[in-house]
Length: 220
Image (cartoon, rainbow, N blue to C red; front, side, top):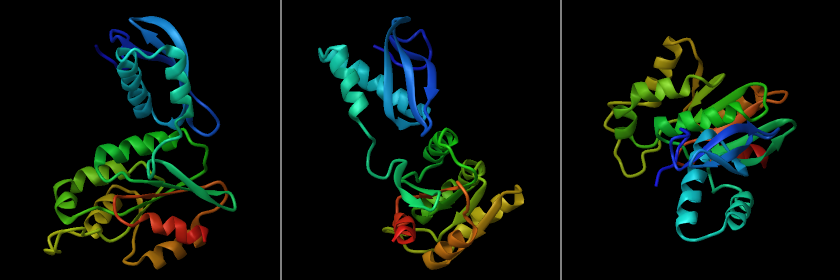
């Protein structure tokens, strides 16, 4: 049994649309024929794929379509996956656990469908070895954001060998023409955001470390 965006799959999707908050809906095709309209309360094309996988599994397990549609509609996402944290004025604050280039790209693609003026992306790399291994990929994945703010690497279990820092990502982004900043403390980042985010801008805090506290501090 197969699923995907290609109509040749057993389960696929067409007529994909996004509502005013970026949530996605689509027409479910089973073996190429329209079967139902699926409305999700999560964002991003990657969640269309996730839901198609869930539908395929649920149908295999014998659930009926009404049960499946109700379950998908009631699902509001998981903790730290494009999680709406609140607003400061009209500036929305979102948090996301993305810490790999492919996850960053998926999150930024979802952000494109969320109404906002400019995007301020605060990224905290996770571990020195991953940062070094994906250095250029990180810069490429982060580049679509209007403004990128780098926090220091979250070491987790690793010692700092001095081979890489968030400044290396910042340098690559600046060389490519991105509006990029690098601060060593969360306090500096928070003050910078308070001074510069405006209107209907969106702030995304991103990473597998403790970067989530930046948005929480701003809201408190």
